[in-house]
Image 1 (cartoon, helix red, strand yellow):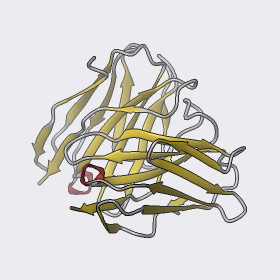
Image 2 (tube, chains in turn yellow, green):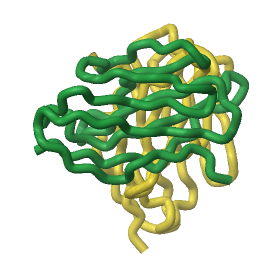
Image 3 (tube, chains in turn orange, green):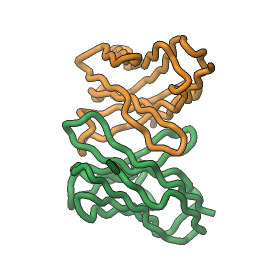
Image 4 (cartoon, each protein chain N blue to C red):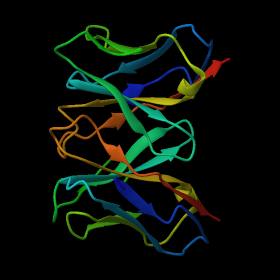
Amino acid sequence: DQQVKQNSPSLSVQEGRISILNCDYTNSMFDYFLWYKKYPAEGPTFLISISSIKDKNEDGRFTVFLNKSAKHLSLHIVPSQPGDSAVYFCAASRGYGGATNKLIFGTGTLLAVQP
Amino acid sequence: NAGVTQTPKFQVLKTGQSMTLQCAQDMNHNSMYWYRQDPGMGLRLIYYSASEGTTDKGEVPNGYNVSRLNKREFSLRLESAAPSQTSVYFCASSEPETYGYTFGSGTRLTVV
């Protein structure tokens, strides 16, 4: 039973355009959401997060939107750059990912930014 | 600035063999985790350790055991490897006050 779902296995966009990655969750107890970025042969690295008390969080070119009623979040990358090409994982937690609040990950979306 | 270090980076096992994956972190984090990554399945939690001396099962613990040796080290053991355990294994650590986990670079395990 996948509690965090990323329904698009892959996404291709042109350099300079917007990339939108989507994530859905089923557990209404989740109150903290994160995006991780993963390059081949490396571990995932933290990108951006959002608490359930907010509906938007912005960090440079990256913005995460949260729609609690729809149990949906999205990551916007504007403008997209070739270096953004990676697998992006959505993750959810009850809290700040501490020991008793485990991160549940989605299946990942492979983003390819074409020059 | 090592962060989380995993050894080995690659391993090939025969079915039925045993091995231990090692993980060490130098960030003084209390919590440590083992995940596996499989195509189409994302990252799934195997075991975690809230603090030194405690361990708990995650989503997919069957076939694995763990040991939290001290605050720095958290090992994952496969007692009798099976082809279904072919995967990339990631160790991570965290503190509740920080955003998310710090991951190691992974161990690619193939069981033939």
